Image 1 (cartoon, rainbow, N blue to C red):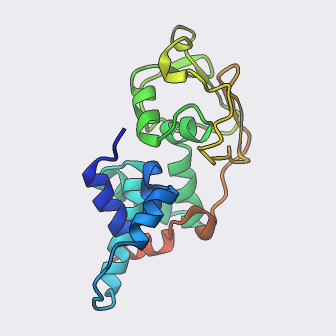
Image 2 (image 1 turned 90 degrees about the vertical axis):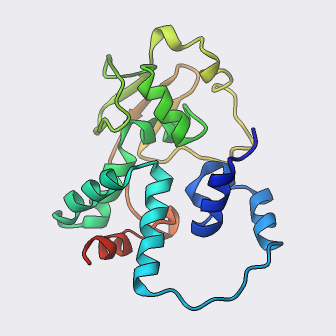
Length: 201
């Protein structure tokens, strides 16, 4: 499937990491071959806006959703850690991290269409917050869907490892939240303190 042009433009502006489809060598080479005109250094506002947009597009959030998450996290002792937990432990993100979907967008659709069960209860809300100890499975009636075909096989092209805070078994379409995710700006590629600067203006 060809990359949507709007996603390509956004990824060129914000960085390849905002969309899974642009996290590729092909995209990196395309960027390297593209001549970029030199411009003025970004203002503080411009830098903050870009970081905020990176987070928004990475998780597929509306402006209001991200603002609400950021404001709630800012009240916590460690705002960046709290924001990371809130975003990573959304049901759609957890389904993506568990390897049940190739992209967060696909994971969001899988959840909203009722294919996912948490602790035996079917959910349809992508923003549903999973917790430590929760068991995520694919609904019995959905297991033969083409959406989940081939999950039991290792995809060498994906290059995406399941994070340590989740254990997942693609063969039985089951995952468990073992602990809360940790935050490291380098590993995540997302600068949450700068996002808080944006919302603190």
